[in-house]
Length: 325
Image 1 (cartoon, rainbow, N blue to C red):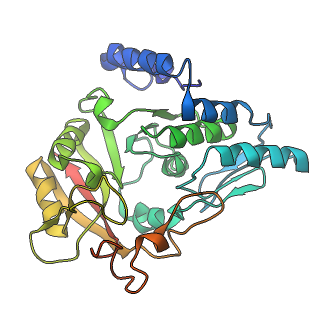
Image 2: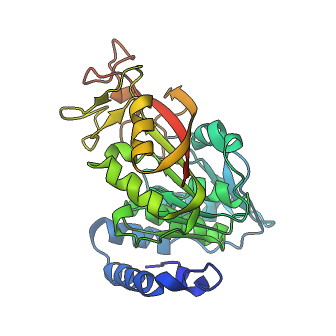
């Protein structure tokens, strides 16, 4: 199991005060993946079977994160590459292009990226945390802006192995990722200049506790970018689905804009702005050959697509920014 060791740069990144906690965390993760089983074994084999290809250049500042070689790869190598990448599916975030093999992900993640990137503080020289970083699509897009470092946390094994596969070829030195939930990350107090928390907060049983921990990990004046499902209403209300929302079990709270702003203020954020509100459509989220599961069409009422199959309002997402004090 490959685990990029952030401790190699602990002095450069000013991680020395947290060295022992991070060292213990990394040791635990290495032990966890030393003898992979089940899906972990499947993903490990796919990762290890990726062909060796010498990259010549990568492109991080376009819709499709890409890496290529000056020497075109053979059809046999391309087929081997695609076959092993597909074993790492489902590919939710993207798209990517690895040596001509185009990964057409479920989400066209560049659409969300374009909604906020010109509305937030420049990312250059900033220490960034990406909570729920998936396969790293947004981290790679961040890397094009020359941050000091980007740390992702992603507990889903499939997505973490996708990140490892991408890093095998992209090899971006100042990007790191831990295969852990956010709660398992040591409290790096007053450390990050920018935190991204996109598509995560509605999965939390206690969103306020999560926002409080995020605030504690940020430097004064740092910026939080948070994206969430919302309920469109001027009222101060929150939807708590009875069982599922859009066929997802782990949706606990979907706030209105006013509730989201209230949560952020309660834990100490200020200068709260709504950067974007958009209805999720079939251009942004759809089924492709790179996922074997259902997608947006399956989550909506076929007779009334303004509702989910459970009868709740169809997905609308909002992006907020807020300042740590």
